[in-house]
Amino acid sequence: MDSAIAQLILEDHKIAYIITDPHFRTIEVGGNANTLQTFQACEGRSLFTCFPELVGSEDLLQSILAGELPRFQLTSVNREASEGQTVYLTMTTLPCRDLAGQIKGVVQAVVDVTDVVALEQQVTQRRNELRLLQGKLARQNQDLAAANAELKRLDEIKSMFVSIAAHELRTPLTPIYGYVEMLLQEDMGSLTNKQRESLEMVSKNVSRLVTITDHLLDVSRIEAGRIELVLRPTDLWGLVNKVAAEFQPQLDTQSQKLSLSAAPLLPLALCDEARAAQIVGNLVSNASKYSPPESEITLRVAPAQEEGFLQVSVIDRGGGISAQDQEGLFSQFFRTASARLSGVRGAGLGLYITRSLVELHGGCIWLDSEPGQGSSFHVTFPIAGEPVTPGHG
Amino acid sequence: MTGLQRKVCLLGDFAVGKTSLMRRFVYDLFNEKYITTIGVKVSLKSVAVPRDGEAVELTLMLWDLSGSEEFDQVRASYLRGAAGAILVCDLTRPDTLADLPQYANQLLSLNPEARLVVAANKLDLSDQHQLSSTQVAEAAGKLNAPFYLTSAKVGTEVETLFRHLGHLLVA
Image (tube, rainbow over all chains, first blue to last red; front, side, top):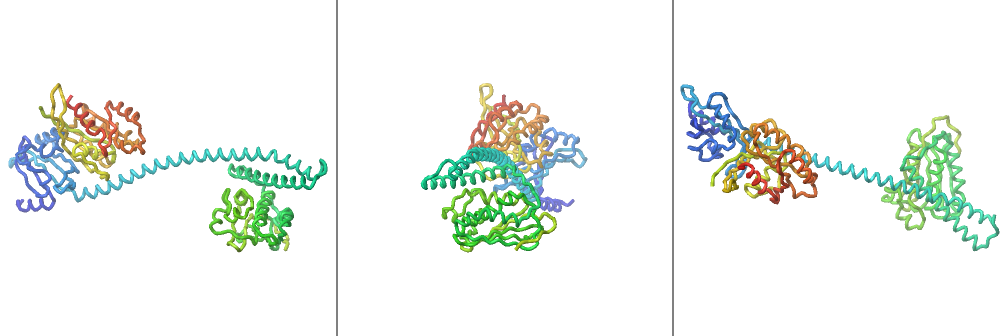
């Protein structure tokens, strides 16, 4: 081959070369000028001095000299260019033969493969960074899982404490309430007006304690998944009327009017009668507590928009609830800003329990409300799938 | 003073700090940014080590080898003739310590007389450590190698680490 063409190919492929004698001493250097710069002043020096990367492979190079090995190659050898950036080289050692075909030394071919390896470097870099991130994420997940398990354990302890405390508080309340009622009925002798007033105060606060402890017990049952519903086809309209009757004394103290209405031909609902009464009762109680005296509260039963459900709505003309308060309304121990300011007492558990009970029935609960516009609470119960009964209007 | 030259490989998983340890030892430099090594980079550094009452100038040919899995298949061709190795793990990644025996076995299968030293790196990241010195000592003991808790970032024990290996190589 014409030497000019050979030089052209060496230049184009960024190939430099070194030819050595049988003692690996450099006797000729040539090829691509830039590639040559990666190993300096090699002429007359040992190949192993120019290329320390070949140290350790002396026996293989001897094998090439002996004609026992056709070639030896090292890939991705890093060198620093004069500007400081990394240059990647492929180094190939080949036998150098004379015209008679006798091996007289070796040819060390050095190819600058930076363009290709730099891309490989970037890909590997990203892959390794991803692996490091994966490792970090895995460790963080482990830490989170451990923290979560600890939180769960603490939550269980808290629930157990609430359950035990509520139960222990609730037990003595029953005889206290009974004796107070007996005293008020003057079963143990007549009372002075002052004594009656005091006992009525005791009775009212015992009732409040009973409600709170009942709520706490319900919460602990809900959290432990220990509430079991006895689902039966139930006349929801009849149930609503019973609840309304129970709450009439409370409504009377506020001179509030309760209006009842129902759509015609209501089917039976599939619900636990006691728990459904608790749901409706809680909504009516809230409507009464947060509505002004002499206002009207509406209690309505109708087929829900969602097929297969009945809807009970409790509509009041109270102060309404802001959008911000609505977000947390069904959470434990949540009380709206207006409720806290109104002086109405409560632990913030009633709506949490109500929502849990509704969801246990497979229904849902929501509200429509705006400050100053009153509130409408809606709950749904599944239809029992039995023949319709005549509705009441 | 007589002169000796020994080939030393830095081995360990990717991103444990092999290049950083070498740069700290050879150039007293540190770069915070992680740059994956592809292939091999050879650097030289001479140290004076005592032997039989006289100082020996030992030139360490430090082979910084890629720790990426993609390099596993060709790593053996770079280990030939190694007199010793620094086995590097990362104190924040327990799996990097667990992998050290593989590197040691590969090196010793080619160079049975090679001397080993373990470097548990990134001592400066104390809040992220997942390995204790006891665990490192136990693993190094199984490899019959001394160990150092190092920080290429601040330079802790880096010089000592390489000098200790130098002593072992001229002993």
